[in-house]
Length: 160
Image (cartoon, rainbow, N blue to C red):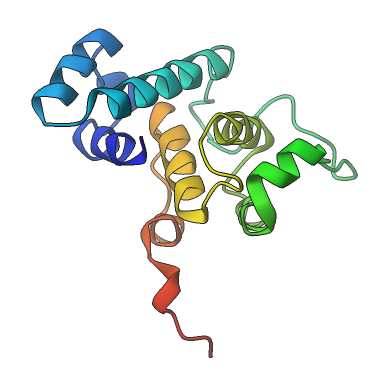
């Protein structure tokens, strides 16, 4: 499924540039993806459309979302979310939120779509693809450092 999502991300630069799901299915099939992978990805994308239905991106600033939680509020993850996202996934979401690039509204969509993804826990690379797809859906281009963090393979990094 994630290979299909990456293909969609790379070939349709914004969510609104992507064809309808039935047309996309034919295009993905023509590119040689397996029917099961296509089906899983299309169901996932349809869920993304549903989850993002009532969210709009403010034009003047992508980070001024409403309603925003107060400074004293805290997102508490359910046991099922903790198990499915895993420690690395929860840490990565906290990192994105603390960097100011994942507003609460987008975080909730990411969590929703991660809960619909296979894996227990969801691999960190898969979670990064999910974050990219949520940005993609809203036509948000992450800044270069965040894009590097989302696309870079961290396994070969050496800590200094």
